[in-house]
Structure formats: C-alpha cells, structure tokens
Image (cartoon, rainbow, N blue to C red):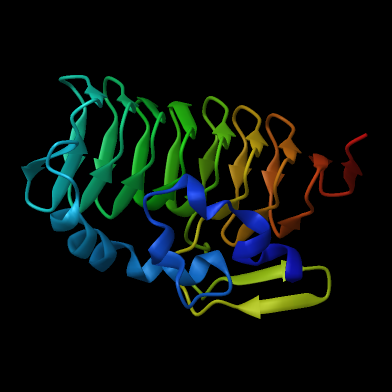
Length: 221
C-alpha cells in the first residue's frame, strides 16, 4: 500500500491544512481530525485575509459566494474560491485556494486542496481531494457501505482496516473523475489517473492510469 501513503498522494504545500496530516501515514487517518483542526486553525488565520462569518466559519475575503449557497461550520474557505448557487457545505470542510464548489454540490467532512473543482451536482463526503483534482458533473463519493460495516481499503490481496464507518474516496493530485461516476467507500485513486465516465470504482487505482472498468485499467503513455 506504499502508493496510498500521504507522501505519494499529495503535495502538502498546496493546502492550508498541511498540519492536519502530521503524525499520519495514510490520508484517511486525518478524517476524524478535521473538525477539531478547523476550530484550532481558524482563530489563528490572518484577519487581513480571512473574515469570521459565523460560529467556526472563516472565509477569505476574496472568496465569491452566491446568495443561495448554504454554509455550516466548522469551515475554512481559502482565497479566490467560488461557491456557486445551491452549494451546500455542511460542516467539517476545508476548501483550498482557487477552488470551485459548484451548483447543487454538497461537501461534508472533507479537505479540498488548492485548485480542486467539484463544479456540478457532486456529493463529496468523508473524502480528501488532492491538488487540481476534478470531479465531472454528477460524480459522487459513496461514503457508507450498504451493510454499514467498517471500511477496508483493498488493493488486490492487500487490505488495510481503517476503523472508519464513513470513508468516501481519497483522490491524489491531478485526478480526473468522469461524469456520473460513483466512487465506492474506501476508494483510493492515485495521482494523475483518469476515471472513465459512468464508472463504478472501488479499491486502489494506480497512479498514471486510465480506469475504463474494473477489469480494464491501463497505464498512461
């Protein structure tokens, strides 16, 4: 599972939440820490850049938020991000610089690195999206197994028990997810990989791959 480690998945210089990952090996280990981290980091943010907008909510002054968006804390949104009409951020969310949170997109217990786009009808829950990751219209992270058991990350015969009931997907830097895809609980998509539209993805997708279906994952040339 070496490729799933934080050091191989993310550029920690591209998030305000780099310290969230201190003392962790795999990115999903940070999921239970997001809420407390926001409450600790928020009061230390530069008041010339960030404005406190409500209980445990800090928004950079350069952020554009449409009137019909709904924001719930704990929440930090970094500079020059756009939150479009009907977006619903329902707490425990860290959104990076130059991101797009699109119309009717819902975020919950997430970290979005800088330049992430979730622009149209996306659900992203209990997930971490790396630098310049992009989710196509209608693509979602499914964050709870149908039998409600704890999520296990599987890569062939290798398995890691996460101890988490809620775990959506870990997307590495520069991951592209095609429209109307479902990322099943415990999915890890390693950096610079592409997911075909209307895919049902589970397990670990190697870096620099194209996921066509579960039996057809090819290396990029």
